[in-house]
Structure formats: C-alpha cells, structure tokens
Amino acid sequence: IKALIQHGEKIVCYVEEEKGGGEIPISVTEYISTDLKQDSLQFQNPVHRQILAEAEAHMHDRGFCAERYFLAHPNPTVSRLAADMLNEHYRLSKSNEQLLVKDEERLYALIPPLLLDFKRGILEVDMKPTLQQLNQPEAIQNPKRAMEIMTHYKDLTELLRDMAKRAGDRV
Image 1: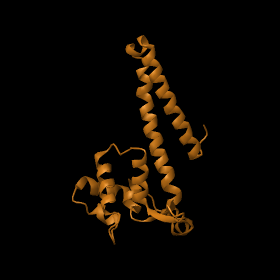
Image 2: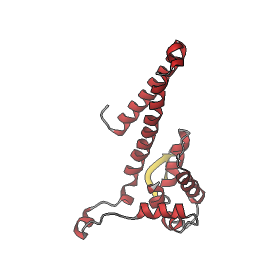
Image 3: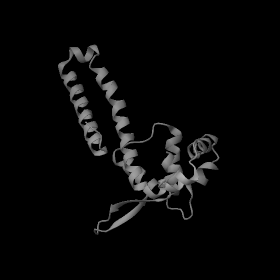
Image 4: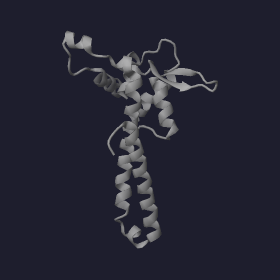
C-alpha cells in the first residue's frame, strides 16, 4: 500500500511484453493490480482495497498524483493511513542522503519482491488452518478426506518453496 500511495502513478522500469514483441512501461499501480488479479488475490483490509481501487480508477488520469490524492482524501481513515505511510520516521544526514539511491530510481527492483513477499505471507497464513484440519476427528476417521488435506498442504508447500526460490531465499 505504501508503494501505491508514494509511487502509484510513477512508471516502473519493469516492462511488459507487447504482442508485437516490443516492451511497454507500466505504472506501479498497474503492476500491482495486474499481478494480484492474475493470482485472484486481494487485500484483506478494506481500506487497502479502497486505496488500490481508487488508484486503479485514476491511474490513467493526466496529472494524477497519488500522494496528494490520498493525503487529501475525504475518508479520514484513508488520509491518516497515507500520512502515516508518507511520514519518514528517521532522517539521514545531508551527506548520507546524497549517497542514497532514491526508491523512485529503483522501483523495478522494489515492487516485484514486495508483491512476492505479500503472496508468500498469504500462503503461510493459509497453511496453518490446512494443517489444523488434519487433527480434526473428521479427517482422522476419513482417510480420503485426510489425503485431500495432505495433498492441498503439499501443494501449498511446493508453491511456497517455488516463491522462496524466486525471491532468492534459502529453501
């Protein structure tokens, strides 16, 4: 969400392939929206869903600035969240600030791993109840149901392992 608020309208250096073989740049909002929709995912928090939906609605508007839009939002919960996310809690000295590469200059490197971490978090949350289902009496008494649950858990584990490999984490 912070990336949407801070950089939603900015172009990611990550590009999509056109059908003709060329490449087109896409905005942070478009990248996040498309990636979540491909996996049929959405934010669980309704305020986060609202921010994404409004960012999508305005992503092609000329002159749209996500920071200003969400800071001045009529919903106080949205504007407060935007202010909290835009507030920098720590300041670097001017000499260190000059050495730092700004997030805007490396969006292509920041956004995909953040989305991958988000998806991995969803998988990890989904794995807990799946594993707990195996301890329920219905699953213990019904070998077919137990096998379905174990197969689902195995599939989730394989997905998690694949995502970890893509993220560069040790498996």
